[in-house]
Amino acid sequence: MTFRTKAAAAILAAATAGPVWAQAVTDDQINIGLVTDLSGPIALYGSESRNGMTTAVEEINAAGGIHGRKLNLLVEDHGYDPKKAVLGSQKLITRDGVFAIIGHLGTATNMAALPLLVESEVFNFMPQGASPGLYNPPSPFKVALAPSYFDMATATLQWAYDELSPSALCILYQDDDYGRESLAGVEAYAKAKGVELVEKTSYKRGATDFSSQMQRLSAAGCDLVYNASTLREFVGSVTEARKIGFNPTFLGTPANYAIQAPGLGGEAMEGVYSSTFIPIPYTNSEDPTVAEWAQEYKATYGEDPGLYSMYGYYSVKTFAAVAEAAGVNLTAESFAAAANATDLPPDAFGNPAFDVSEDNRLSNRQVRVTQINDGKWVTVSELLSPLDIE
Image 1: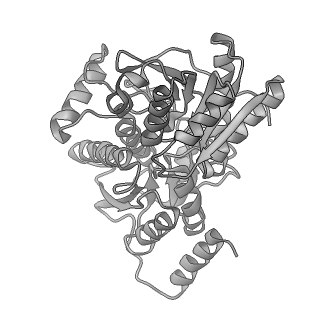
Image 2 (image 1 turned 90 degrees about the vertical axis):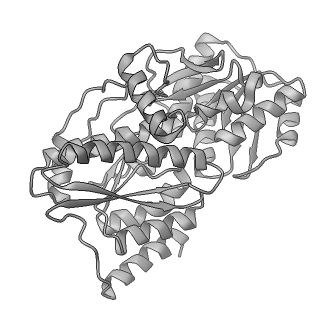
């Protein structure tokens, strides 16, 4: 029996043993949960998520809530550990009685906890992870936002070959669900396009030393490195490469598209590429709607908002729109039906449209490529769709 199967069995056993389940929806409240990293290697992302979601909750509640019900946000810290993610999710489900877990951070942590949510008929709404398992096979309790890391790799690599004409493709990847999904996309792209994947090397989650990996990639003559890492590891690996005079094009994923990357890595990060489907809301944005929101966020939390601030904010706002459409009698059935019937356009912040159906649980399939230019991420591509390859 796998860990996930054991975990699912444990929660079902706990339910049949007769604990007192809190009521997810009352006359005046809807319980929602967040499982995120507040103490581990991507705690910066987790803090952003919590703050962005809190901002949305406060706005919604100040406006009267959802059919008179206020949102009650309950937060669990998983430290970027899949086992802790399962425990945190179990607590939210069995003790706190949440209607949905929104914006769960991390692909590996999401995939570990997902069986609990589906079995318990709790919505995994717009998780901050990117795996096909978060939307396939379809389930009413899966509502995903991020295209898979496989699909994002194929889309952005095609852009790189069209625009940059690299000659030696390589990959650095995190040794977990996230990294292996990215690796699969890179390998599939190389096979489909007749491109040699010259070198591939991995690291364990939370690593701080990338000297051996960068030496290996440098020795292979890589001039395009697909960098499937997270913030700290992205900065650490690129900085190490610059230190040894290894200067390929680095192409990352949304997991390292972070407002902190240029600040933490300084000049070493200039020119690196990444991809995203949610834009960072800069306080000095030329769009006054974005700038005003970002400035208010900074005044509240004492720091600039990042990608996950907006991700968290957007996911709660979208949840609220669907819950409002579900009507006064909010149940799992009415929410699922409302999700399938609700089509939302891109919002004022540049976030994507929302559109799911019974058979399609992924609301967005496109990404854009961005690049660090003068210490700021700048969009350099149109919306890109994944290639039809396996």
